[in-house]
Amino acid sequence: MAIGVFDSGVGGLTVHRAMVDRLPTADLIYLADQANAPYGGRPGEQIVDLTRAGCERLFDQGCDLVILACNTASAIALRRLQQTWLPGYRKTKGRALNILGIIVPTIEAATGLPWEHEAERRGDKVEHLDVLGVFSTPGTAASRVYEIEIDKRRQDVAVFSEPCPNLARMIEEGAPEADLKAAVDGHVTALSKRIGRMPDRAILGCTHYEIIAGLFRAALPPGTPLIHQPGATADAIGRYLERHPEYDPGASGLRRFLTTGKPGPQNGHVTTFWGGPLSFDGV
Image 1 (cartoon, rainbow, N blue to C red):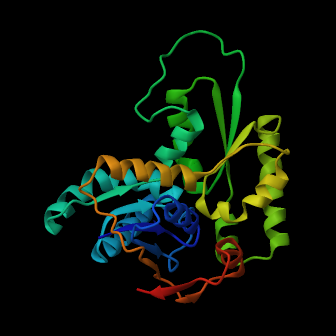
Image 2 (image 1 turned 60 degrees about the horizontal axis):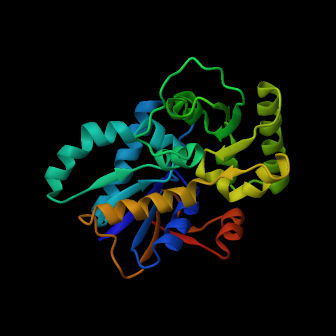
């Protein structure tokens, strides 16, 4: 069997690469829904339907476990699919299947606490707030998933999200670096004005943004820690597989890259990130 990695486009390649590093012998099948990318500005029901279709494709390709390497899909579709669609689909397929997202491991990394932990509410005044900036798609920002879930666990962390409406599309379409830099600089400035200062830490809350993480580092004050979703996700999946031997990740080191969009080589930003040309097959 295999592990599926699903994203609306090329951003999930950052998670795929971290999975390769963490699980080098696992069989991995990547699916980009480039025909419908990006997801961040779409209505919620569309996101649920598109995510379900992507998961079905990966299960049909032989995957037992699908990782939603997309914050928007994880924030809006994951719980719905786990609770209302997946149980019946498992029975139809007659085998163990599951879908996991990237938000839980990201929040664990941001808080330093397990997902199950919930803070005891006290009336004590918080002496020092750790200001955490989240750069994300409008869909993820509107869900307020980071604000809600981090507040449950840490009263001393204040979360501010900055929606970046066109940034994932620009990366997907291979926009010039100067245009990407201007967009990133603008979003960092907008967030800092809303907070009243620069954030102490930041989450790149869209996996596309990891491809241009260097531009965020340059726009933020030197040394600002970035919480990297790909590594946190890969480590969490590795631990999950140790606890759940019913999900077979395979052992041949298979790597397949699929797209619902135009097959063939990806753009220069992907080539630079990947360290060489990368081509997708059509589905």
